[in-house]
Image (cartoon, rainbow, N blue to C red):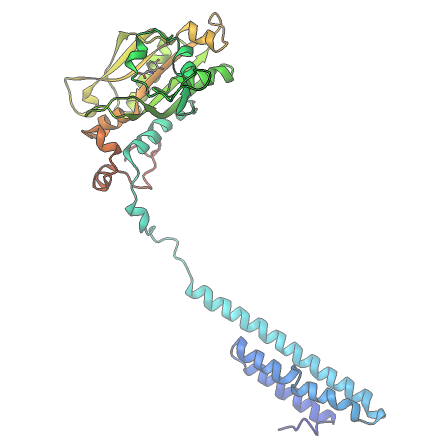
Length: 363
Ligand code: DAH
């Protein structure tokens, strides 16, 4: 072995170079390589020790010795860099081999399989999917409304008997005597839309509504979906077509029997209630009421700043909870809002069961 203290000749330095480069080559991981580097080039390393001897050499030897040690240092440094790159590549390859993901394996569900989507949320997604396919946009309005939006603008003045049917939850009156309320239907979203958008308008507005009412078929909070189409030519034929297409798509049947009964809503003229033949849900022989609809009343158009001589259209409103009960055979409305996990596991949907028309709404 070469002794560093005596290594001064070119032969000695060449031997030291080859000794150090073979130590570099022998290092099998980055930690070992670092130890080799410190032992050679570190402050107290062998190459540094040679440099330290420079001062004690006679002047004529200094230059050539310094150059030779520098060359040695460069050779060792180059060997260290090359080995380091080699070991890093090998370490990365080893890591990639252990962390390989087989993307062809099925998704592991874990907690996703435990969670359940509430049937009303699922049905809301189904309904939005169907109407979005027909070119409807989704509109929203606040749950807390003014008397004007919930009633007056919809052609339901203070003394109108329809107000009594709504069993409204009112807030305490403000200083000016005006009262806010929890909206009793999604129809105020019609007003908000027509007051801020120019026709053509084609929207649905899903949301929570509130009425002071509670029994097996009524809960103080429930869900409705409003529909509104306004332009210059839309007529009742369009209304019937839209509702029929909706019912076929929603109940996933090729044909559905529908009955339009004359009815009365202050905000539509004429007004109708719509029943479907219960064979659509596998119970022939009965009619089931599913929604109210009609042509938007000229007063309502006028209240929103639209000229009823120029614009016309239809509106409809349906109960989302009721649609859900009918489609999925759920008997008691109250269970929807009781937060019972056993019920939700039974009637709920998997997180990955996203309804699409292409893939089949519920399958
Ligand atoms: N707002 C009505 C209700 O809550 C439902 C309704 C009926 C909405 C007819 C409409 C409509 O847009 O045209 O009972």
